[in-house]
Image 1 (cartoon, rainbow, N blue to C red):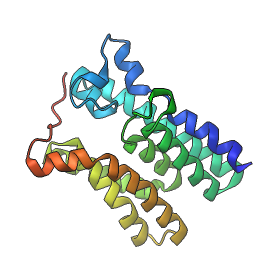
Image 2 (spheres, rainbow, N blue to C red):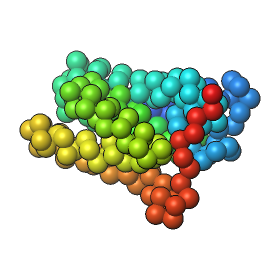
Image 3 (spheres, rainbow, N blue to C red):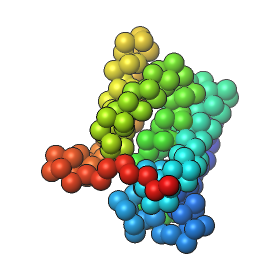
Length: 193
């Protein structure tokens, strides 16, 4: 039963939201801007409303497996499905394992699993984005902030460990951003209107 739920969650994660939205406008999002097929790059290249659309689609890839898993089999299976969907987003077998960074998908999942923490992280993300002008810095704040808040809110230990494991993958996907931040060459979040 567990495997039967995880496999479709992975393939849901492979749905190329950014690529499809950009392609509809004749743009190969993997070859412009940062080259990352995610909401921030779409927003930077195509405009804010398109970036929001991609973020919403990527978030659904976390919301759906989290909700289905929680209702049908409980929280632990839900987290297994979330991990599978995030992996599908980051390493899609349908696109030679070259995907996005998983932040929106994980954010959508946490909206279901930990709504109060997610609301606080949403405020933190917005504040960090406004101050730093860099979406990567705001994303890293989310990645680090999730387990910290989970500890403060006395979330079960197994759930915190699972969050840390998934977020470690997200942080690894941001290795290039971190290197550019240290060098001072990271792109700012300047949205095309």
